[in-house]
Amino acid sequence: MLDKKKEKNKMTWREAFRLNNRAMKLWWEKYPQMFATNILTRVMNTATPYINIWFSARIIGELAGERNPERLFSLILSLLLLNVFLGVAKAVLAHWNSALLWTAYEGVNCMYNEKLLSMDFASLDSSHTRDLFAKIQQNDNWSNWGLRRTLWQVGYGFLIDGTVGIAGAAVLSLPLFTRAVSKTEGGLAIINSPLVNILLFGLLLGAVLLSPALVRRADDYWVGYSEQARFGNRAFGFFGRAGYEHHRALDVRVYRQDNLFRKKMKEADGISFGIKSPIAKSARGAGGLLHAASDMVGRVFTGAVYLFVCIKAWAGAFDVGEVTQYIGAVTLLYETMATLLRQLGEMRTNAAFLQDTFEFLDIPDDMYKGSLTTEKRRDCNYEIEFCNVSFRYPDTEIDVLKNVSLKFRVGEKLAVVGENGSGKTTFIKLLCRLYDPTEGEIRLNGIDIRKYSHREYMSIFSVVFQDYKLFAFPLGQNVAAGMDYDADKAKACLQEAGVGERVSRMKDGLETYLYKDFDEGGVEISGGEAQKIAIARALYKDAAFLILDEPTAALDPVAEYEVYTKFNEIVGERTAIYISHRLASCRFCDEIAVFDKGRVCQRGSHEKLLADTDGKYYALWHAQAQYYKKENMA
Ligand code: ADP
Image (cartoon, rainbow, N blue to C red; front, side):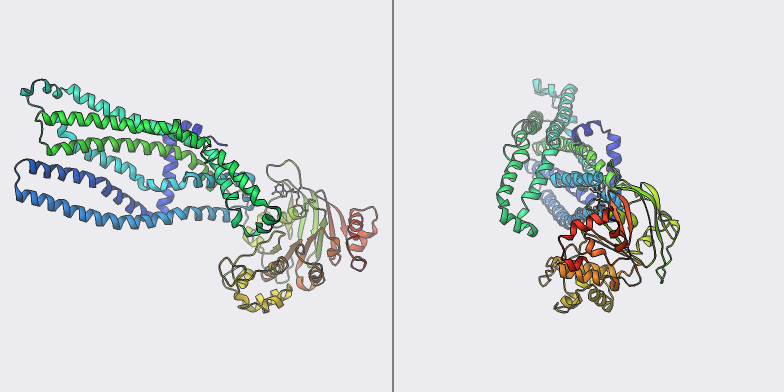
């Protein structure tokens, strides 16, 4: 785990500002208005107490002094009008600002989503990306560390608060130091000594530096427990919500997993947020004490200010009305300076979390993408060749494809068979350029596929992956993978895929929602029906290559038989690749490639392969034969 505490200590202020500036730039590009509302709100919030302090001092002074009714009235009226104006303006700005803030808060998810949707599949699939993203999300869930933390700093408003606040307080408190006590006051006149002023300044600076430093130390405890907090969030996110997950409901009841979940939650509670957890112990112990000490420093300083101001007022340096002004101003000066330092510290702590965020957002699209067009051919006359292709997944040691050489003849039906883990799906991932080979080359019509425009190259493939997913959208949109669709074509594809009859029974036809996530009237479909809809989606794309990766896994034997006997009809002119570990499903293909431990060990028609009694195909066929009826296997 990355130790944010250590990282923070290593991080220079320059680097912290650089990362923070980048976050600001990001917000500025997306939500420029937020800067205006945020800054204006802050200026008004900061200015209000000083205005009130100034007017209160004048009003009390007037009451205790000349008691001129006209001056008193105009002071009260001005104070009232100013407060009404500021109140209304602040309310309007606050609503506007919070609406923008919420949009931006949610916008963080959209930003991540965009990155995840657009990055190369190989990057998305890498364990590093997944770990990094999980870490970002957990830090965000835990305490909004990362991008969301920078939202309150938009436009570096806290620096503005600090500057306005310090300037206001300095102006209001200046006379406290310049007004001298009359010499006739004897011993009290010692307070006029510049040394006393220097002492008070020293106290102010000491308190300003010490109080946020103590809070930072306390925060270090908090940040240091990020691993426990992340674990807690992850555990509560999983075990604490297990009941929400409909697909677990059956297992939970049959195996009484609810007991397991409760115990796991209790275990997690002890490690993360529970009263016996280290986080809670630190809150009661060192962390809490440091916070209390920081508070105490503030109180001691306020006490000293009271003493100083009261002695000066007692000795007649200024009237009683000004007492409130000076006490208020100096206390505010201290609080503003302390807050500014604390916020700067928080910005620096957060910068370490921003490093992860930007590492994720900066993940490059390394895959070389050429610009050649694939020219849409009506005759589907594409020829694909694997030339000595080997492949190893990133961060792994073993080649899962070894020296594969294979040529597809146009319009043919190729079956790829082999045991689980022999590399069949990986072969398809390479064919569709989700990954590039580690060695060797894949060629389309004699040209390395890397030289083609990626988007165009992808457009010649339709794949039904083993773990395909449908959306809880209307059926027609699922089939067309788009909002607008050609209804006749969608119906024809569904019919071809063998689910036409089921669709005709759906109340709203193609507009029927699948599942109930977005529509109470949505239909629940079986695994087999879903698989057929996924096949219809592949047909609708009308690509030159149709690839079915174990398409019959969720089908019952009758439906499976239906799909594979209708396969030729479904495929039509297209070149088809049919992957299965069930050999009986592949007999109808023109050619069968047998994969074994990442190599193509045999190739040929069903009859030819079966004739080789020493071959892998023969062994697999006879191993599976016992599971099928004789007539199916003949
Ligand atoms: P098949 O489709 O024949 O069942 P696969 O192509 O899915 O086989 O897998 C071949 C091998 O590659 C397996 O050993 C599998 O564990 C490994 N593998 C698959 N996907 C990944 C991945 N994303 N990262 C690392 N190894 C993987």
